[in-house]
Amino acid sequence: MDTTLRPTTAGATGGTLGTRANASSRLVPTRSTGSVDDTSAATAASTASAAPLRANGSAARIASGLQDQVAGAQQALDYLERVANQLEALKGELTAKLAGTRNGSRLQLEVHARQLAQTLAERKKTGGGSVDSNLNYSTKPATQRFRIRGLDIASLKQSAPQNISFSVGSAGGPQMSVAIEPDQSNQEVARALDRALAPMGVHASLDENGELVFTTPESNWSSVKDSIAVSGRGRVTTEELPANLAPQQWNVSAETGNADALRQSLREVVQALERVHRSQAAASAALQAASVQVADASTPPPDMTIAIDDFGKVAASTDYESLIALTSALVGVSRDRVLALLGLR
Image (tube, rainbow, N blue to C red; front, side):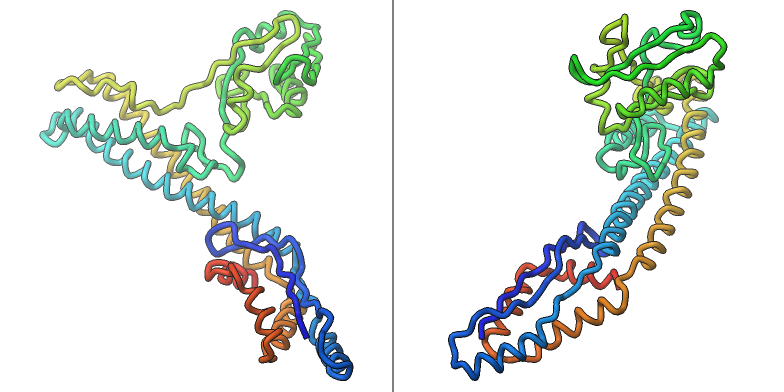
């Protein structure tokens, strides 16, 4: 009896913490070319042993999403540790230079500043997509902060009441309108703008100084920065907000150095270290929480038992057709994929 195998298209997305299951597997008996008696007996046996191999898609999807979160948190922790070490080195060099000790050499300070600037420039590639330009960690994708030139709270309230329409994208794209009233508070104006822009992937809020600031995911920034239009103004100019830490702009080349500039650089380093430590704690907590959820998102025992029994019955047969079916099923199944599947148990 010929037996064909329709394998699942399940695979690990990386690491050993999750898989994607897209379809179930089933051993399907094909028409035999043997005698009638042999065919009847074989068909009965194969019917009994060819129960469907069930895959718990819900558990696999949960584990896959959690795996992405775990991978992002791990990358963020690795990146933040590298930044923290470089900041600590810079802190020591700046402190030594300000104190006038022999350890605070110009060359060492320049080298450390260049290394940190390079690491910050690589953030989007090596930070796991969850560390923003100010070294803050979030389980959500990192965002880009920007302003729209000429669009601030004072000018909006001065022209109230008014209706403003926004569009993001090519000409003729969808527009969202917002009504600005003179009796609205600054926070209410920001919330109204946020509701209007949210469907376009842009959000509005007030920063720590009460100024209007807009955000969008960094992955969306290239398509947003030059394509925002406002009614009555046409295409507007967006201004990317720089990061709080900018070692490439520090003046540390002079042998004596500018004491005030060095003190300001030291303050930036200390503040950045505080943010990094908070981000490390947040990433560690997210990693631990996701790991616990992965353990809880295991395949239910009944489904696992059925799958094991199905496979065991076929594997117990040593006839040529069964061996061919098993061999076909295992083609392309790597050690990492097996470990990932076992991780769901």
